[in-house]
Image (cartoon, rainbow, N blue to C red; front, side, top):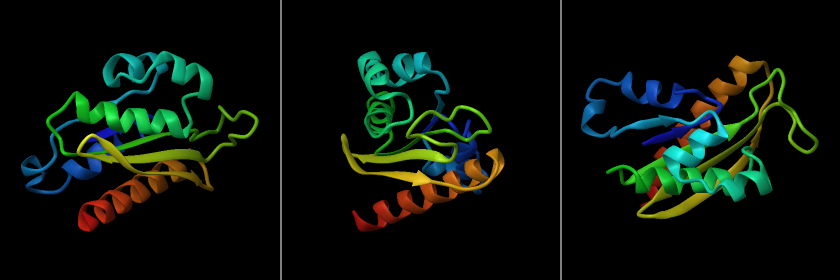
Length: 140
């Protein structure tokens, strides 16, 4: 299960590019706007207002919400600033928050500070998200 913002569906695409993925990939959400994060994943509007879309609390809420609205056992969520615009004080281009949830709880959340253009930031986010998800599943 993927709950994506800045990657726009690239995590789901990477997962479903694997033959047999229908056996383990349940669904994905592209929640690019704050409204979509709230309506589709249940991210509280107050959390979005207080912390901004690119924050640990929002990434955590996206991962938790993804589990609540699906049959998946694992969820990975990403929200970030891929650029070239969108930077704000304390959150430059390349800032991404990643969270992984399992069995109703967030197992990990991390802030990434990635280099490169929009495409590079998005690709690095997909790679890190899938690496962290695989590591979490193996450790469980």
